[in-house]
Length: 389
Image (cartoon, rainbow, N blue to C red; front, side, top):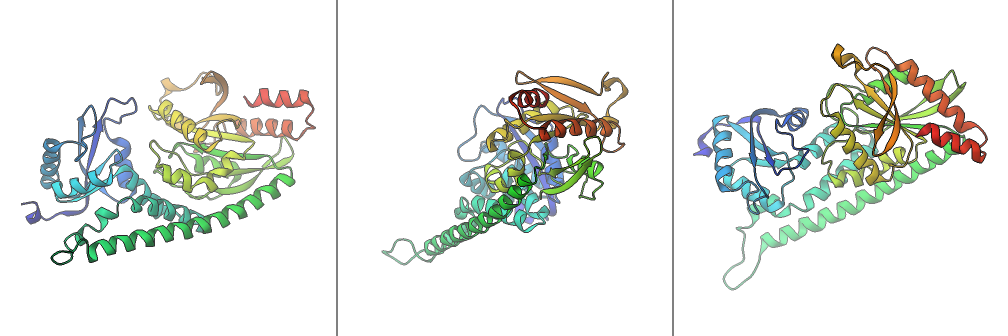
């Protein structure tokens, strides 16, 4: 019956399964934003509860039938799950639903593939996509399963094709890793040159769409691409920032935004880009103060920073989008400290859009750069550590 219904290209049903985890997005708001960023149109949403994933269909056969009916009703051509699916679950769901089925990981990879601009960014995305695809060969080439040998034979052209594709993808992964290694060596040379020039290095990090690129533009008067959407920036951009109070230039980098359940393949692939955060003297952790889920988003950023070895780099919290807060939500002081995992971390409220609070941030950066540039006696080193934390 589903084959007779004309599907609407790009129309997608969003599905989320609540396993009782604290970060579950019951409204599927973020998945919807991801889908729109990838060029899809969410036409329906379905949320269900389970104690554990169904081994075959992730949601169970009854709920799968409900999803199929919902897709037929809205003429959806695709279904996207908010969680990662195994290759077998993805294959079984497509057979059961009669439409293409993707998961959150694939959606993020698709967005990254659309947004990557630099040679390095494209290589990083290609590596992550190849690694993802290598686990799903059996689904991608399921049309070859019927191609079997004659009587008394095992296997045949179908199996040969799968093995061929597996080897081709393996070789492509190897080539891409070698090319990325070359790019990383070049980045390492650039970083060592900056270190020899005694440059104070700052990296902007934060959850996607927190306004990092807007703040970057406000600080250095650059024209880096900034938009109210997820993953507007994928490629690291580095500029010099002149701090008048310190009478010196510092290096500031805008990095890729983080997100919940960022695929590990992407974290591995983007190690070269995220190395800017690891090697920084200071991290500006940009937070969307107007987002009600910003505490969870901060926790996700800290988890990724720990994963890449940047959790020990001094941080300054920048609560952005002050202009988007209701008057009752405005802070009493634009500069204070908050407790993060038992450590008091300095915080500045500002609006990269209106410029409010940006001068205070520049003054704070100037003070920190002055401290670092002084001769590092043990006393001065202790002072810098206290000021940074």
